[in-house]
Image 1 (tube, one colour):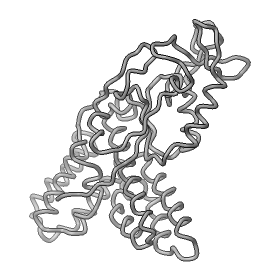
Image 2 (image 1 turned 45 degrees about the vertical axis):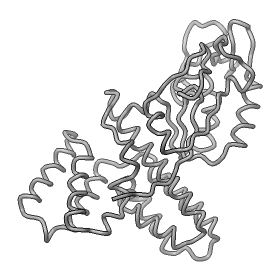
Image 3 (image 1 turned 90 degrees about the horizontal axis):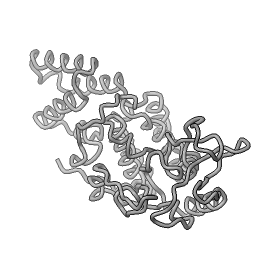
Image 4 (image 1 turned 90 degrees about the vertical axis):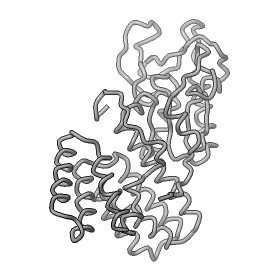
Length: 323
């Protein structure tokens, strides 16, 4: 079955395969970004070049002075905190609507999670980890969006929930343009099982919202729905939620399936519960049944095909599900 996927708009650090703009003049090729290029629209920036630092350049780092974070270039004994703050605010104020962010890990400008924070000008010790100046403001402005670095996206689980969320948001942007409540209701129906797998509380909240949209403007209706959608998808499908969805889907075929098929599927679910097989294995069985028995409702469910198959990869960093 052909799926008409919406085109996500993703922000990416420019050094991640778009230009040789790292401090040492290098560019960093990332497999995921190369795979994404035919399917998404990228918006790219390099904050350090944006404040006038050339390529190559002396490296900058984040230090703490008098309880305040500063962007410091040790080789020149110069601070670039003010310039970076001005660039960050101007760039993000003018940024087009983005469905997600892929940022350079450990960068003092773009790193979202694991940037070294030094205690003073001397490079003697790391007091703690922080976010880069550019990434910190992104996280503050859009805390519910999919914001990751290229290192974390080598983890299968992190990558999957990132892709699920950005393609869902792109799809919802397309729906919003219709200015039709009916289109939003249809969107919710298509995403019902995905939302159920991710967050049943938000599934109920969103269900109540689409059941009674009267009394508020379409813009407010969409704003409230999108906020709940982001909360629902933020952590991706949960183990128990995904099993509930799969058991619910199997119920559509209870009259057609033979007892041995039901037993085999129950065994697959148990193996998935015990993390012996990935979610894609029981999902593939349901997909086969959808086609075999021509089940239109399940065929419409995004849960079974949330993003283009060309982006499906079982490769993993090996750093664990919680990386």
